[in-house]
Length: 121
Image (cartoon, rainbow, N blue to C red; front, top):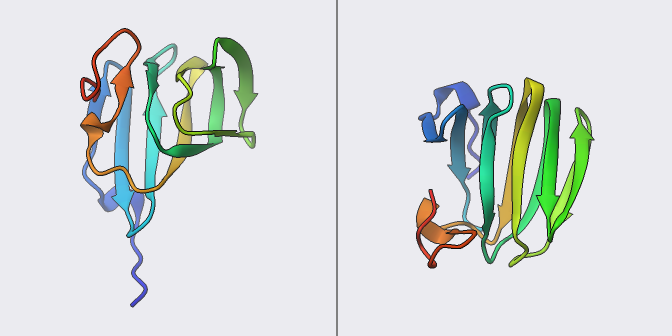
């Protein structure tokens, strides 16, 4: 049976300073909305899921596999599973949506750069 709702109704978490997220899980995917304060970062990390990132507002610097690029509102990226990546918001902050497949079972299912598996937020 289809379900629906609003992001505003989901619980908000703050995994890193200046970063807020709301997460929705379906049977096969995880959808997360992130809101970044100006200059806030989600550190370099990796996970086994493929990730599609949509930039809804603002701009970000996406670093993936050692290369960086700036993405602005309306941009998107696709990263295969296992690729180390991180994101830093621009001067006005940013709002992004990340879609992971397969579903992320727990926030600890990421590995921060230089950390042991399971050490992420």
